[in-house]
Amino acid sequence: MQKLCRLLAVSFAATFAPVNWAQTVTAVTPLAFGRFTAGAGTVTIDTSGNRSVTGVKGVSSTYTAATFKLDGNDGAPGKKGKNAKSYSYNPSSSLCTTGLEGAGTPMMLTNFTTDPTDLFEKNSKKNSIKLTGDLKVTVTIGATATVKSGQASGDYTCNLNLIVDFYD
Image (cartoon, rainbow, N blue to C red):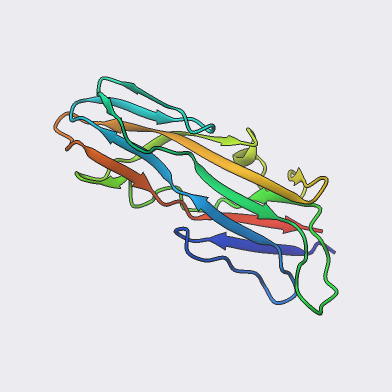
């Protein structure tokens, strides 16, 4: 019988684990597009945290890919649980459902990318990603923001809600 542990890192504030599991998902950095000038174009953050802009001008500022630390170890003190052997993306995750927030009107994001590259396609136990070595992995997420004409210049950030299913 499959054992499943669903964890949620919500807005970079908390992690949750069911009683018999102690695997964790920890949000490290939000998806930050930094500061850019008004205009029409796109701003893309890749999974390495690099920024590229077209049609708008990027202004010196902080920008990052969203980063999450996953730990498949059962670290519950005093309990004999099981370590996770694999994990998968749960489609219940919220990828900027409120839009990219900042100085102006929220912008929706497209072209999400992940490292590991196939995270969004790995969405079940049968189609999961194996944990190896110390059972820890860093997941990064990038995306593209489409900037419409008249968008206010400023800093824009998205807090992702990533849900991951762990399997034994």
